[in-house]
Amino acid sequence: MDNGYYQMHEYKAPAWAQHLNHIPSHIVKLTSLNTPIHRWSLPGVPDGFQVFIKRDDLTGVELSGSKVRILQFLFAEALRHNARHVVTGGCLQSNHCRAVALTCRQLGLTPHIVVARVSKKEELGAKGNALLYRLAGSHLYMSPTCSYEAFSQRLRSLAGYISDKYREPCYCIPLGGASSPGMFAFITLFQELIEQGLFDNFDDIVVSIATGCTAAGIAVGNYLTGSKLRIHAVSIALSKEELTKRIDRMLSDIELTLGANDIMDIIDDYIGEGYGTATEGLLETITNVSANTGILLDPYYTGKGTQGLLEELKKTPSRFQGKRILFIHTGGIFGLFNGEMDRVMNLPGNHAYYINEWPEKDIPLVQ
Image (cartoon, rainbow, N blue to C red):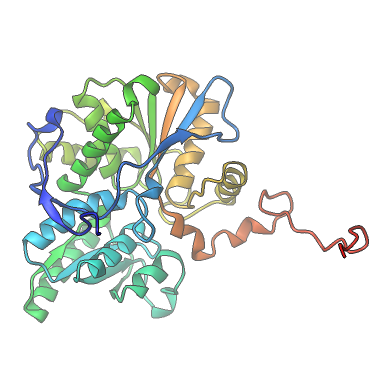
């Protein structure tokens, strides 16, 4: 029994979203939903607040994380266009690229990945997400540093080149899957949250934000159903100004006459040195959280989101509507395996540094 995996069927948006523009027509099943929600005993949360976690890191194994929700719509579109190749891109440790590459192979398509900020083969390596999309036999294209707009243009240009070269249709997935279909993935997630008791049990939602698609879909759902919660988006890369511009365009595409600042609280104080970077303080937060709760965060998405949540609860508790906070864990576990954590694992005092010599003299051997 395959439980309907890889099968495509018609998509029906939630009743409260059926008036929007660019509603996807189809969806292909790539995961088992709904993902669970439970209490999260996050260390460092001020008294009076309760934090809960939505486990979208449990959408699957190799396709773990919220990205697969987007891909269910985008790959349905690719298949309807009879695509044989798929182009996308991102940084070396992109969760999105890993998920796209593996989904391609599961559906019998060929993945083509443009790797940003890489100019030499030696820089690619084979760790974390990069290992997984290379194991999927992805065709890799190295792209030196350029602007977001120039990178997006390279993706589209490559898709045209591949179509001509192989004389087969090629589908282009934008950076991070940011698109109208992608936003409907998280409008649908909001309906899932409603069915899990969202309005009765929570006051605020916190989520990491990269290209804007995830937070935008959740915020649209909240707005269209009466804005009962406050949505906080912790940026992991871009400024509030840049994210606002991008999300405003997404909202316009689905014919909503409002702006990002009307429906969400964008927090850009925890970017650090930008996308794909992590401070030692952030890495120590990750080890502290995992050692105390068993929940694994990654250095680029959920780690920054959690750090932002903790700091804002301490410094600016008034920005939260209430005391019951729901954090959306968007996945990213494979980002832990790129070697970044080596910087803090052996620091004395680190929560992962419980290493002992064998106390041979003090422990009598059992005969």
